[in-house]
Length: 123
Image 1: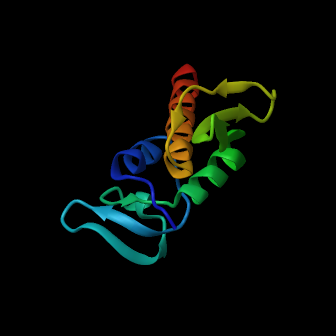
Image 2: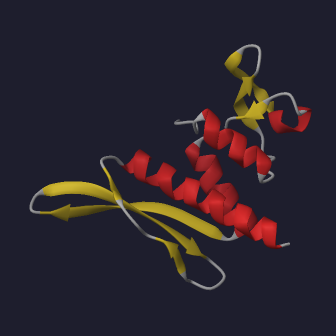
């Protein structure tokens, strides 16, 4: 399981990520493993979800689907990423290529979090 980086975990906390996780950042200890908990609820710690957990959360809570797909040209493979609005079917983001699936998916998640922030600012 690949967990999101600390910077993204902090952004997720800012947009209301409140699911149970088994890793959290603590200002005193750094990254640590814990029993399933919503570390964001304490205010002192930051939940560090897996990439898969964030993809599900974005889809279920914000109707945003993040994914990466392979792109092969002249026997050279890269990964493209996209964010789709599930209510409209509109592709909100599809720009750039990455060397790995995980990098591409992380980039899509980062963009989806930016979209959520923008929606929150409009409310």
